[in-house]
Every structure is written in structure tokens, then in C-alpha cells.
Image (cartoon, rainbow, N blue to C red; front, side, top):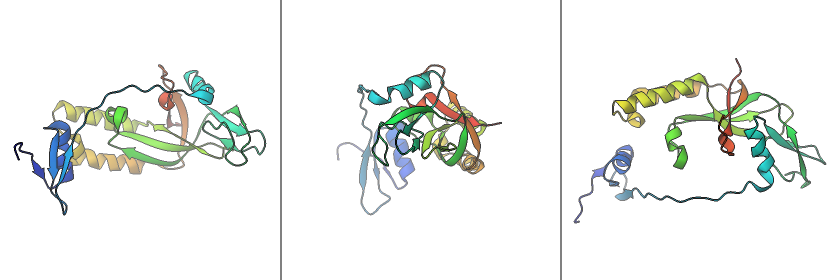
Length: 204
């Protein structure tokens, strides 16, 4: 082999080499050796919100809207042009001002444009008298503390992804977030007309 490629038995070491080192490494921790490499691509998407446009316009105005079936009355916390139950067209309605966490996650990685946003928490919000959930980002003080912790480690050159203290804190934050917690929406000051224009914080 003309090019020398480093071999690692631990997958996290492979990823560190691929992302921050030479861009290619061999994972030798399994039954077979596997080449892992980084590929950079950059391209633009053209996206149309079509019939969901009123939903994103409302987010830009600091409002949450759902869809309600004009026939059976099933209410959705997300845009639905047609009812999933009976197929009838829906009408827009204002969602309640707050809800409760149905379930949650805490992620220290993110793909694509969300890579630099990590760590973050995603929740499913349950609204009263609404038949479906809304997935959104959850930003309590504990998540902000994690973000600050990651930045401090990056300043010192430490790899936060493999840092034991940081990983322990991730789990502590995960267990501290409780399902059933009352939450309220906040809206981005500079709307981008996407789902991240709204996020949730705990009700104090």
C-alpha cells in the first residue's frame, strides 16, 4: 500500500482520525478491517413549503398553529393538509400556549448543519386536546450549561466527545429532564422559516 493509513481498534479513535486528522482510517476492531473516510460535499437545496406556508409564516410572527379536521375533529400539532383518520381537509387553529414533555432525548452529535449545534435536546410536546405531538428543541439551563462546557473544552484543545467528565454530564442532564414537565414555546428573533424557528423552555 503506497499510502500509509492508520489502524484503530476503537471506533471513536477512527472517527477522530477521519474528522480531525488525515481524513481516512481503518477500523480493525471487528472481524474484518474497514476503511472509513471523510467526504465533503457542498450544494444548495431549493425548498417549497407549499400548503404548509401559513404554519411557517405564523412561526415568524411568534405563533404556533396546528391543523384540525373539519369533519371528525382530529387535531394535529403539525401541518396536515388532510386528516390521517378520514382524509378530509383540515383548517388551521391556534395551539395552546404551552404543553408537557411527552418524551425527550439529549444528543452530543448532529448531522449536517446541526453538527455545530450539539449538544441539544429534542422533545415531543403534548398539548391539551391535541391528538398528536410536536417535535422541537428543548433549551433548559442544563443544556446551555452543556454548550458552555463544550466551548470551554474546545478552547483548550480537548476533545469533548471522548471526555469522561463531559460524557458524564450529558447523562446527568438526560436524567434531570423529566417527562411531564410543563413547557412553553419561544420563537427565534431572526426567523429562517423552518422548524427551528420555535423552541421550548420550562415553565417557571
